[in-house]
Image (cartoon, rainbow, N blue to C red; front, top):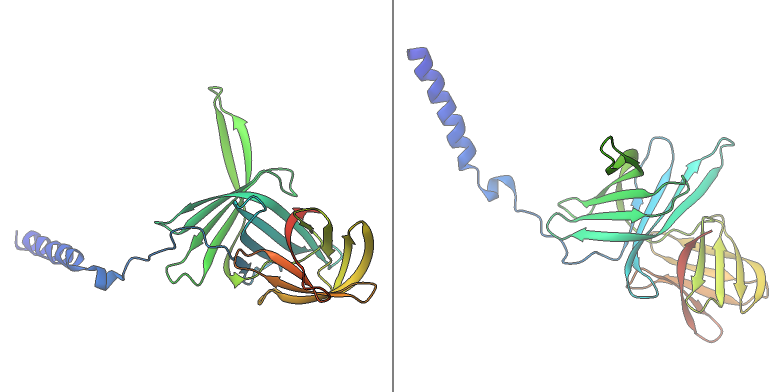
Length: 243
């Protein structure tokens, strides 16, 4: 009997200890932004050497969309670039989680991405799933999510590589950046090849066209890529599209 009472006493103490924990002990609940933050996230170290960039921005219609550009080491040892664009975004301000659905992907199947802000809001945990649909035994449509990759990401800027074509809203400017300092472009119907510099931590860079004229590259408050002519100061927002 004494042993039984002793066990009850220990359980009671443990229970009281758990009840006594306050918000101060457990930490203040995180408060997330009211709306989706328009910014980019760059993956940290991934074992296979692949790199991911998840960018939330506004499209030409003013809707919040997501673009995911990524690279992996191919069989030849060179980086292979791929991307998904026009991802629809659903954001939960209570949990700080975004769910992004890409209707098309390089895998030939839709992708679903979960981006979860950590409580310090410095890091984001990202999980990427390939989505397959099927019909169950009762004839009801079902979905299966197969995990492709998971990683932690830090704030950054949109990435420029050969998997994306960057096009102005009026379609008078188009550019493909190869990720290694060369850019193919079409401006007012004239095609050419130039060189560029770009820092995807600051979003700043330059473009020099074949005729010697130049542009600056920047990223605005809507996380959109902007090219500005050094000649007349005219700025054009470029929107991403899968190459």
